[in-house]
Picture: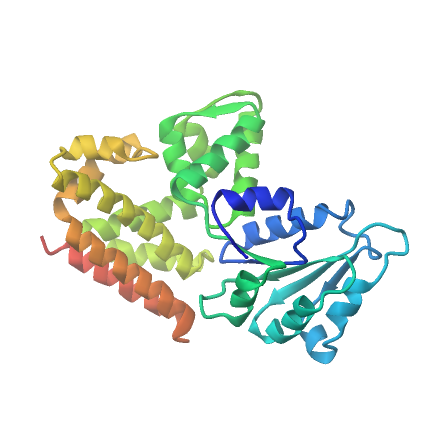
Length: 339
């Protein structure tokens, strides 16, 4: 069973008769958060060794019957058990498939995995089995990220100004756990219920890395090759992952593409920019408007294709991700220079 959209939240509250769940995706924080939510449906203390069994692909390779044995085992202290398989991949498809074909016991089996492509045999198994489910975990962005931010801040008694929300959505979202940690830090910074301003967000979350990502996005779209490359090298030195850079730059170009489409349909650049949600930060509006004049919608579409191809190459070719990303950023900046 393949789950997406609103069905995911309902499933996480009540998985029904499903015997095994695959939780996978690039957002490792969201993957781990959902795995823990599923575990807590059956077990209060996730450290209880009698009710929680953790396995690895190596365990299942050495002893293929181990999964069924753990699922059928009874907890000495009573209660339902959970079996978690960490770092799942296609190597365990056969073992999991055999279990789903003849499930034993009543334990819930949860398989935790990183990103799996559409051709993954493990992913296909969970998506097609009647007694299993697959939950994809993608990085929060756009409206979904804004919702996460608003909900976390509301729980702390905080509301947020539009410019502050725009800043946070531009700098958070790659990892759900990191997003929550940064919002917790912001709530502690505020100290008491109130309204979060842009200055508050920058002071709490706006570290050098976040501000450098802004410089990189605007440098690429402005056609400033030197700024784009020097900023990228600084980000790499700070430990920022190339794919995170590609996705952040991609979000900037997606917003430009959306606004450019509205302009082509007859809206003014100012009106198009004003329609973006979350809104463009006030201090960057004029620069964003100039970029709209530089980039027509068709070239923005090609820019997004370059970024998608670069991310795919980072994951599949075996070439250094930093080199692939650097070439993509140069291509974008040079394209911006050709009016």
